[in-house]
Image 1 (cartoon, chains in turn cyan, purple):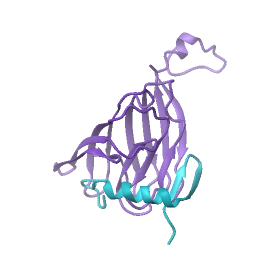
Image 2: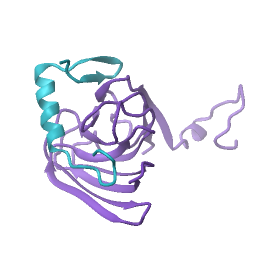
Image 3: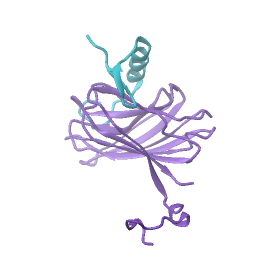
Length: 39
Length: 179
C-alpha cells in the first residue's frame, strides 16, 4: 500500500519513513471537527 | 489617484504604493492527492502579520478539518474554537500544548475554506492566530478558532494537513499586511 503524498511547494511525492511516522502521530492527535460528516 | 484602481502607464508614487495595505506574497496550487502541503518562504521580516486563505478544491472523500503547524514544530500549540450549526446547535473544541492547530479551516467534498490571520510568525516571540470558516454539509455550520504557539522561534514556512483522506486541488494564498 502506498503512503500518503506530501507536497512541499510544487514538489509532490510519497512521504519518507520519518515523514510518515510524524504524519501519523500528528493525525492521531487531532480532534474531530464538530458537525463534519467525518472529522 | 483612486484606490485600488490604477491606470495603464500611471506613475506609481511611493506615497501611493506605500499605502497599499496587503500584498500577495505567494500562491500555491494544491496538487491532487496531497495529504500534507508545506508552503515555504511565506513569512519574513517584511511583515509582522499575515492572512492565509485556502479556497476551491475539495477532498478525495470525506469532510475534514484543515490542521496547521509552523515550520517543523510539533508541540506547544494552544487553540480553542466554537461551532454553531445551521440548526443552532453549539459545540466547541480546544487543546493545550497540542501537536498542531486543529481545524483552522475545512476541506470537504464540496469545497475547501480557510481564512487564517497569523500574527508575528517570523518575529522571535509567540505566534498568534485566529480563523473562521463555514461548511455546507448537512451537519455543517460555522466555526471561529483562535490560539497561539508557545515558543519564540522564527518561522518562514507552514504546513496544512488533513486528519485523513487528501486534498483534491485547491489554492493556498499568503498575503502580508503592511506594518
